[in-house]
Image 1 (tube, rainbow, N blue to C red):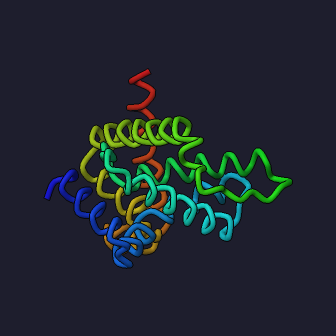
Image 2 (spheres, rainbow, N blue to C red):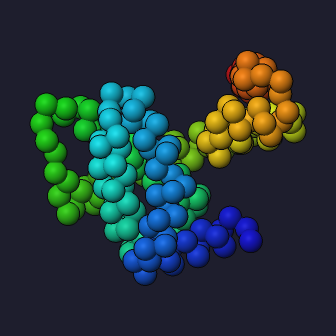
Amino acid sequence: MDRRTANSLAIEDFKKNSNTAFGILYQNYFVYVKKYILNNKGNTQDAEDIFQDSLLILYEKLHRDNFEAYTCLGNYIVGISKNLWLKRLKNRNFYIEFPDNYFIENQAEINSAIENEKYYWEKLTGYIKAISSHCQNLIQDIFLKNKSIEEIQDKYKYSSKHNAQNQKYKCVEQIRKIKNENF
């Protein structure tokens, strides 16, 4: 099944208020939102709040007749989440409630955040495709599948955690080198 078909099925499930769709979105994308918020002066409760607000905005967007997904739903969710979190940081001293028309009033800014997120993931995917296949697998296991260093050590038969961490570092350096060559 190609990405567009998978996206269409997920969108249809999400439009139907499917608990399964909400669960899958949470399981697949909350970790990215949480990591971003924790790295940017937030806590787990903030991440949960922002993620829920993002799902509500996405839900509203999906119920518009002219909505078309040009990227995976995860890019939309992460883009919306980053935008919401940055707004909350700007107003940190105040509690912000988002009115029902928040999406309409901030559509251009949200769309811009989504496009930036889409561009970032496309570039990162290109860098990952350019590294060795071993490193591609290792990077996927560590960063996309969230496997622990112990699981990596076991899967790839490294003699120690240090060796596994060293290999992770070498793979990340391959990506950095390719990125720097493209500038």
